[in-house]
Image 1: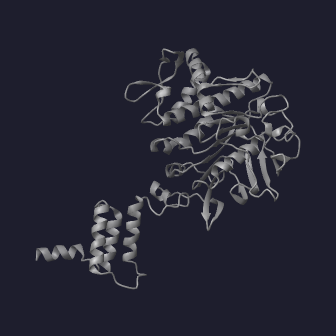
Image 2 (image 1 turned 45 degrees about the vertical axis):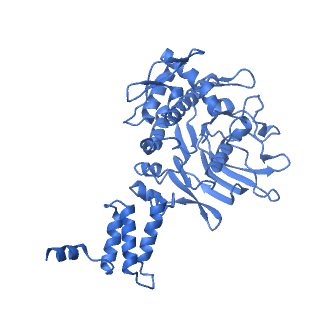
Image 3 (image 1 turned 90 degrees about the vertical axis):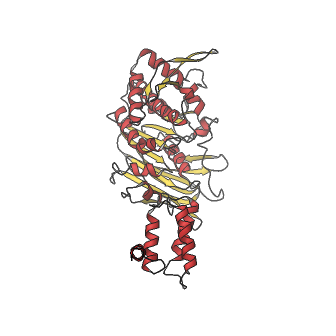
Length: 447
């Protein structure tokens, strides 16, 4: 579990100093301000590895570089290990070696670490398999440890589905399609767990129900999983929607990571870890709004269900107001944090925002999380701004009757008759005498 992070001369901002919540950390802000970069730094802080160094097939998780190579660059962080003892670390960048160097020695054990990246790739650090080496030895950033075992396991989106062979010829990741068919054929504990996770991640309107295993083509002898649709068909997973594939891959990898960790711990005579850190970039990717509205609560439930004895820290980046609205019933200030990225006067600012209940998704769109002026289409937003300005008390000149009538027609053509702004604008115009009151018009017609 990561407790704090401080960066000097690294990434899109000169300095960054963050405290993190023990349970949920939500990152918001515009594109390009450093949310994904921060998740990469957190992964490295927990595992001392860069995903792209381990698997060059992915397009994320590159090694972080200083802003200015002529000045010192530092990554400072503190972790909470399985003994619940917090320990601080510091690393500096060596430009000649192109690696981050810190004090040698075995670091604290952070527990199981899972990273779901925006391109569909996944990374896994298992303390039963990867907690071996003396960190920051000369071969550190090669991605290999002193026992020729990878510093972590990183799989591209294709490898998640099709599997991957280990470089040493022994370790093989079977992948979703093979594992799922194997688990389902044997009705194994893995399969029962997968069904449970999929049920938790599903919406009530569109539950993910597993169908029969089926062949895909004449040239492929493998049996493929299927999903039963709400319209009565069984769809082969390769034909499933991007949103369904996203949920299915997430469910599979969570089950794979936890179950394999339990097996690995048993092999070395240890108990499974009591800590899980889960990093997710763009958690809402490909998901319909009804799925977005429940994905974070569902993930927290799944992580609790996987291991009753392990605490979970979730760190996720989002651009979705539905995600933020979904947190209102479950956000706990004592253990959860909202971290917002903003661009102010040409400089990136990262700060902890107080989480308050805003209710409507529209209110979240106009909050500090997304900084939109309104939830209207951009053209209508500009028209509304013009309408406000026309009747503003800051104007030195009274608008002409023609200006008011032209604006009234534009608003009537653009907005629905029941739009709240129409009522607001007309009431202001009536109070200022720019438009006749509706009651007066009706009275004059009846007399």
